[in-house]
Structures are given as C-alpha cells and as structure tokens.
Image 1 (cartoon, rainbow over the protein chains, first blue to last red):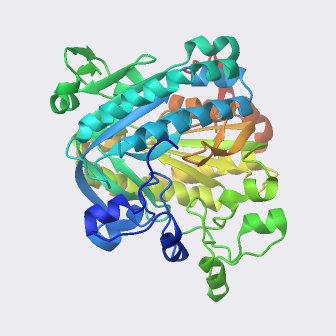
Image 2: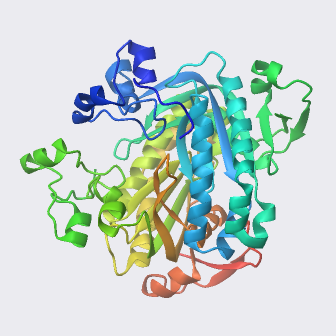
Image 3: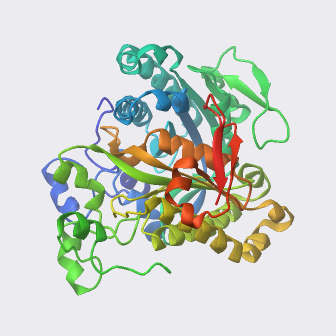
Length: 244
Length: 244
C-alpha cells in the first residue's frame, strides 16, 4: 500500500527499544515464534497487540489518545439495491483507502464493522500531536475516497450520487486494552470513543466533525473553523463541534 | 467457559474431514504451524478464518446464514458517568456472557464494537436450523446477562436500573469472507446484516426482535408471537418484526 512500510516494529522499538524485524530475511525467526505484522497496522507486530499483559502487567491501561470514526453514508439503503458481491467491492475500496490514510499517519485501524471504521492515534505508536495526526488522516481519507469516486459510481449505478464518507474525531483519556475474558478483544473504551462515534453520525457526506478537545490541540490546522451545537444521541446537552 | 470445548476443529472436520487438534498434546504440532483455537469460536481453528482462499479459491462466498446483533442499552449515557475502568468491567461481563451463549449454539462471535456484539450462525459450522439456533442463543444471552444483574448493578450504581440488552436477528443470503485487501477483515455483508442491526436498535431492553424470515424458519419456537410494523433507519417501508 501507499503507507511506507517499516522494517522493524515501531511499537516495540518506541516502548522497549527492542528491534523486531517485520520484513525481509531477518523477520524469519520472528515469524517462526508468531511475531508478524499486525493487521491493524503493518508497522506494528502482533506482540504489540498483547503487550499489556506481558510488559505492563495489566490487561487495560488509561491513555490520552485520539479516536477517529469514518462511515460510508447511504450504506443501509444501498445494501438493499446492490448484491452482496457489489457491496463487498464497495467495502474493499472503502476499507483500503481508510487503512492507507490511517497508517500514513501512524494510527491503528482498530475496527471495521459494516460501513464504519474506527482508528486509534497515540497507541501503541506514540505521537505528541495525535489529535492533529488524526485530523490529517481524516482529510487524507476524504481525499482518497473522493479520488476513487468514478470507480465507486460505476459499482453503485444511479444511487452513487449519494455516496460519501462522514468522519468524527474526539480525544482525551480512554481505556485501551483487552476486553472480555473468553473472547478477548483489543479495543478502546470511554466517553471519547462514544463522542467520536456520535460526531461521525452527525457529519454530512464529505464532512469531518471534531470536538472542542481536538480543536484546542489542532487549532493551527483548523484555522477559521467555528463551532456549532449538535444534538447527539445519548448526550443530555448539545455538543459543540467544529468542521475540520 | 461454559461452552463445551471440542478437541478437534469443528469447521475443518465438517468441511474437509480433516482432524485439526485444538487442545491437549496432539495440538502441539498444529500450534507450531500457527493453527490455534479461533478467538471467534474456540471450537474452530485459525485456519477456518482463512479457508476461503485456500479451499474455496475465493475471498468471499454467498451463504444462507443467520445474523444476531446484541447491544447493551444506555451505554453512551453510562459512559459519561462511569470511569473507563468501570465501563471496562461492564463490557467484560457483557462480552463474556455473549460469547458463552453464542458458542453454546455453535455461532461465530464475529465482532464486538463498543456496546454491540455481532454473531453469525451457519458458517463455518453448518447448522440446518441456524435461524432457530440463533433465537435460542439470543434467549440464552438474555438469561445470562439477567443472572449477572446484581454484579452489573454494583458496578453501575444508581443508573443500573436502565441496563438491559436488546437483540435483533435476521437470516437469508449474505456475503461472508475477507473484505479489504490491505486490512483484511473476516465478516458478513448484505441486507441481512443491516436488517439484524436495525432490528436490534428497535428492541427494548430485554427484548429479542426477529424478522419474518426468522419467524418462518423458527416458528415452532416462536409460538403465539405476532408481528408489529417497525420504522427502521435506512428502510423505506415499515418492517414487520416478531418478539422472540
């Protein structure tokens, strides 16, 4: 893909100064013991996905991080007019462009569920300016999907005009780690995750909505943006959001 | 966990008559080459997750299957009053009980995302009565979560009264396989998936709502249930749903 591929795991190097070879002949012994590039980010290894228990002696940690949600609009209605195979091709394009944009800015593509994608910035790869990196990834993602509009339109036929991506971003303290004991799931939990998801739901196709917390940290890149109050599901009071 | 654990992979045995040892001394050589119990169902192996490409020479296949969504109500508002660590404990309980119920009825716990869980029945483990198995899993799941209500209430404090699980089930032809080329994601796609998700959103805490297709196939277990029309997001016309 377009994201430059690291030769050693960025997470293990940053956190422990241990060089885990991900590619080339040096990666062979690591692969034998099960250390491979992570599906969530090809510049991390599968060990990073488990580092909580081994290194931090905890299954969950509290970190300051940024969450980005992106969602393909009109998916439910499209799924009624397209064949599953056609929807599959649409999702292939959407997931690939999301992955490329998220990885280019060192984020973790944590989840894909149907028409939505969730990414984490600042863990396991640390980024002092993670809120800004997420905003840049969101813009890159919008550009990449827009660049493939013709391909998507050909797949979608007449309904293609409606298609676009909504993005929502929030940052702050959240819980990251393994949830569930029998089915272990590596993910992020907390108000930040929910707020990012709700901001995404409020975004129109092509739009990126960020919270006050993101605006404060990435102001230099959000010059001239002013907030509007949004009524978000599950939130008692209107939440101010900025277009990025 | 409570689901009985198979000694060999049910999927490889059913589909290819190949015995892949999952547990005990015989599993050692399989583990060396990377074949382990799947996180999505401990009675399947990691090879089942990849069998499309190797066995079926395709990355996606069309199958008749049942999709179950379960969602923990009041999660967004709870996440604002609880600490991430407390929310993590709530999710540990929710995911574990969902996993136990889904696995007890040979389903695949395909996704967990925040407060929601998505399961597939009839693939890779084949079940002639998959719609019925999903209904039974949904009821088991409700019973299991209800049995841990005291524990959940202790974690949630006063707001615990609102807590409950909504379940939605639909069945029919869908596309199952790997989506995305750079970030490969094993999941199900199609109208069935969206309808199950929307039925779940319409369910009240403690309720299980199933579609006409599920009712038709699992009628013996849904005696006396009558349909009511529901307005579901993304659907032009009201959709009749049955309480199970």
